[in-house]
Picture 1 (spheres, rainbow, N blue to C red):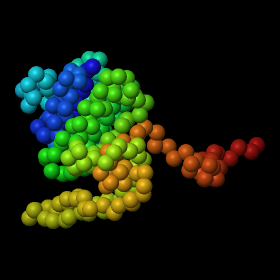
Picture 2 (picture 1 turned 30 degrees about the horizontal axis):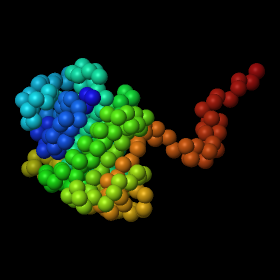
Picture 3 (picture 1 turned 180 degrees about the vertical axis):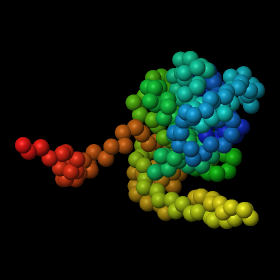
Picture 4 (picture 1 turned 30 degrees about the vertical axis):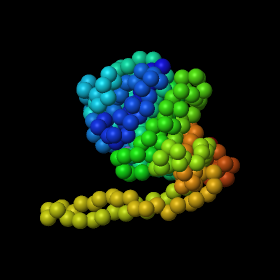
Length: 262
Ligand code: MN
C-alpha cells in the first residue's frame, strides 16, 4: 500500500514524523508537505505563481520526502499528479491542535486531505487536540489502526474522515465515536497596533464558546474519545431551499424584462 503523508504545520513538525513512524511496516510512505507552517490556510491553492518542490533528507530514514514551497493543498496536488504514483491513502497530520466544528473550513489539514478525497482516494485529516509538540502516541496508534483498515479496503473513499484524538496516553482513550461537526464559535479578536509608520492588525483566536452537544466532535474529544467525522464537499443547505422559493420568485420578476407591448 502506498501512503502519502502531508500536513499544514510544515515538514519539520514532529507530528508529521510521528505519523511516518506509526506507519512503518504498514505501507510505503511518501512525504510531500509544505516547507513551513501553513495552519489556517484551508484549501488554498497557488494559481498565480509556480510552486517549487525539492527532495530533502527525511527525518525518518528511507522515506522519500519532498518540501513544497506552497500550501498543504498544493502539496497533495503535486504529490498525486507528479511526484508519486498509485497512492492508496492520503493522510494529513498529525496536526498540532484540534480541527473541530466549523474550524474544518479554515483548516489546512482538512484542506490537504480534501485533495485526496476529490480524487476518490481514502483520505484522513488527523489532529491531536493539544498545542504541545509532544504526546503523539495516541494519535499515532489510531493512525496505524486506520491505515490497516485502509489496506484491507475497509476505509471509505466517498467521504473525507476528519479524525481528532484527545490529548491523553493511548491507554486512557475512552473509545471511538462517529460524530457530526459541532458549532464552535470562535471569538476572533483583532489586535491593533502601530509600527511607527503604519497601523497593523493581528487576528488572534481566543478560547471559543463551546456548544457541548452530545454526538458532536467537540463532545467526543472532551470525553477522551477519538472523534471521526465523515465530511463531504456538498455545503448545500438542502433544508433551506424550499424557504427560498419566494425570494427566487421575487427576484425572477425583477430580472426578467417585461414583455414588449406593441
Ligand atoms: Mn496546523
